Image (cartoon, rainbow, N blue to C red):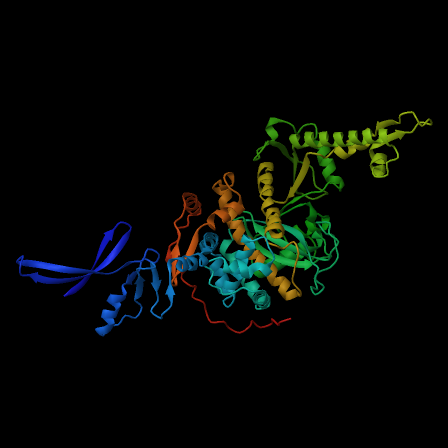
Length: 570
């Protein structure tokens, strides 16, 4: 009876058909071996000689799916008659090589933090496309029109083509109901009675079809209509919690109540604690957060105070000569500063006013300002009629121009003006209705930089420096997709920060390093390239297992349903 055996010779493994028989001469059993094929080094699958396949076919046995070993060309011949040599096979393999590592990290991390679960529930028909587009925004600093090429060069997405037309359709395929369901579920998932940091950024647009795009105060100094994007971050999770869009003509102080009311109505969370910068400061907003008036509601808050009002200057003068003491030291991530809780009332309100002084910053800003004014004096001596600096000359200098043309102008400093401008350098004040200790107030406020860094990523890394869309529905949904991207990038950067990865690589380098994990498709079978030590280390830091070929199986997608109610194509 014939059997097939394997024999390793060098780097190859050959297949032999072994037929047992009785050797009458030697008086013992023996076997006769015939080479019938080998194991293909590329696919790790068997290929067979033409003679063996012909013999099987003549005997009536099926040879369907069995591949031919062409020993003259060391290639493979598919039984449909097409012949592929080694060079052609190699070209096919190279053409199928795709980037995989960054997609794998973003997908596994999103599963880990619960993002994908919330997306599937909130947007059951389009979650995979939304997630793919968000991955693109994180990975590529390019307009979405290039997403199709990016998808074609990456494995593990299983979303089909992401052409410009398909993305345009996607941006009207869901609406406010789906976005609200996501925000509710996402907040419920990550809520831990944490501080909510709030800030606003402007996003300019060339489009004339976005109704909320209006002219207003542009934080980037651009002469374009804009929308105001208000973003809320959880300071414990360091992840985006909620976002909303307002008319571009509204100021920060006007949007505070609307944002908080909208957030509470959507999430049911009435125990939020808001951290805000000085752009939100006004007596009206403070009164509202203290529950005063018909439209007020009690809310715990911490807010920075601008120096444009009288109370902050009075608090500084009260503490100026006593704050620089060891008992008032405030620990920071760099040089220590000084801080005290002022005992005075704040504009007749019983609030905790925390006064801080940064001596290092104060000295630097004073030196920089002195150097600038001194340079103005040098320019004035050479050219007292300089039109470019005329306003600054009048502000900081006293210039006496002599009657004789050959005499040097007499230039003095207006010390009273200079000192008045420098009286608040290095100082800042935080106001709260519930945080009593200066160190605690400083620590909470310092975490607000997660919002500012988030906005920076929105504009620079996520391609939102311009809204290249037309119409409110598409605008709202593109900003929503970018919000998903911001969650992903924030989760990656949080881990990098916590595990000190930023000491050895940047965010971009991490994604580039992981994208060197490649896949190839050989006869439809996924092959994963071996990982380097650096790639394995990155995945271990994120506590994500190394991928295997089974990771590349297509995502099981639900059948596409009808377009959500209330959403109409434009």
